[in-house]
Amino acid sequence: MKEGERSPSPVGATGRRESSTTDELFHSPRHAEVALRRMEAYYARGQLCDVTLVAGSRRIKAHRLVLSAASDYFAAMFTSPVLEATQEEVALRDMDSDALLTLINYCYTGTLELHEDTVEVVLSTAHHLLLTEVVEVCCDFLTKQLHPANCLGIQLFADTQGCSELHRLASKYTAEHFQEVMQHQEFVQLPPEEAAHLLASEDLNVPSEELIFQALMVWLKYDLEERTKNMADLLSLVKLPLLSPQFLTDHIETNALFKENRECQELILEALKYHLLPERRSALQSPRTKPRKSTVGDMYVVGGMDSNKGGWRGSIAAGSTGIERYNLRTNSWTSVGTMTGRRLQFGVAVLDGKLHVVGGRDGLKTLNTVEAYDPATNTWTQLPPMSTHRHGLGVGVLEGPLYAVGGHDGWSYLNTVERWDPQARQWSYVAPMSTSRSTVGVAVLNNRLYAVGGRDGSSCLRTVECYDPHTNKWTPCAPMARRRGGVAVGVVNGFLYAVGGHDAPASNPCASRFDCVERYDPATDTWTQVACLSVGCDSAGVSLLGDRLFCVGGYDGQTYLNLVHAYDPQTNEWTQMAPLINGRAGACVVVVKKEH
Image (cartoon, rainbow, N blue to C red; front, top):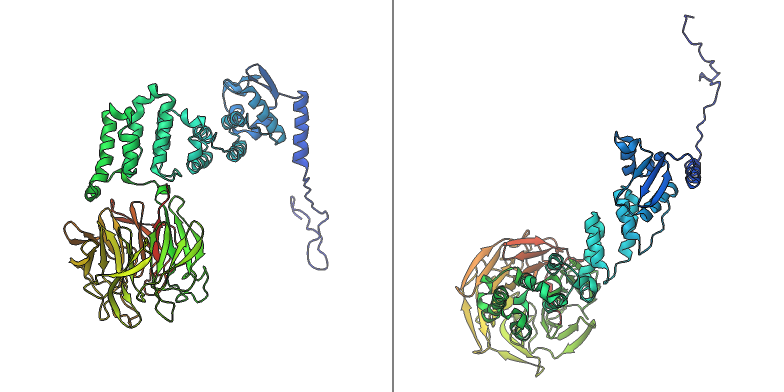
């Protein structure tokens, strides 16, 4: 054997090398805990300490190694070539001594007792010492303490400490509970810039813009002499054009506070013009004409067809009998109830805060029945039936009465129109349309009832006509660029929009669905194409919610869609919103306004 070579290990009968020793790795599960407990004992007795921290009149003896292991702040201090790294005493100026002692104890024990009256100073000190876990625990503690009386203070504190999640949650809480927040001391003590930031929020949970004005007055009157100089800036954040004419007259136009302020007078005049000149509203758009999310009401989607061809199961999951409610502020849908029975190709309109469901078909026969759903009580009430059975009809509310327009009675296409008088509680016929129309789009614009597109039995229609209730006459309007059956229509800022639809015989299952959208200007009697939908579809539901037109569901030839898009006429863009819980086509979409 050459020098330096190792003797071979003995080989057993199996051919494997036999080890003369057995390796073993031992791990004590309590070693770290025991070691830290011992360090804590040394700390408590002041033994083996190598640094003294000085905060105010308090002197705290500690171990650099323990502090550096727990805190990145101390690790940087004691391992960097700075003066404090070698000093026996380190002065921590502007640091609360009680909070510092609490956190040094935490470095040794890993435990922390939080109290409502000291948590903010502990969090602030932990933030300085880069004790991230402590900061998170303090933020969680403060989140649980949120209350209308303290949420603004916590929000401002979180902002100064850079605690983004706490700031987000406190801001959300403030917006959700604004009606209570405005009654507490923190609100009236807000500096002008913070008050402005709060009043400008689109997410405040208020039933109407009147409450925002009332909040402004509460804030102003707390220190009127000093805050008068901020009055016009803050009044500009109140959406005055969206206040009722009565409120404007009684509480703002006659308010002595605003009489001598030119900027305030200009804002009041802008609001009055908005009410006096409704035909010019499209030219008067501004941030003050965009309603806050909570004031626009709730959007309801009722019934429709789904993959079960109308939902023979009769459940919310089936979609066709289910009612979903959309909340704009939370961008979320909730299932809220079901119709009393299966109903397709019906109409829905809102009267006195109730959803009136009119006509349709149940899969076997065409219906003339009418029922009203009260979302406040989740109850249904039967109403007198129409004179004519109708499915594929359009409905609209014009100057009080509800109109049922066209449709199909099971044998023929209809041009007849019925009017429901809610006071007399009876139906009566009015002048018929010039053309029979089923799957017709119906909307109300400038005190006229518009009937758009649809089918007449032989083809889809591009014709449009409007009804004047004062003359009881229908007048033809400019036709659309495309024939549209199954078209959805809605009104925004004095314009009528025709959304989607198809142009093919009803027997053709592969009929082309449109993604194009046309806008009608009644002042010029012309149609213009605007931004297209992201997908071609017919039988969508359309409704105005706030200042945007929502397009809900529809059928693209293969799928009953759960897509929801909102059209902003200011940007000419569609934005995708939270999808329906259940995809559906032919659903009726209506908005129930908040009661002030």
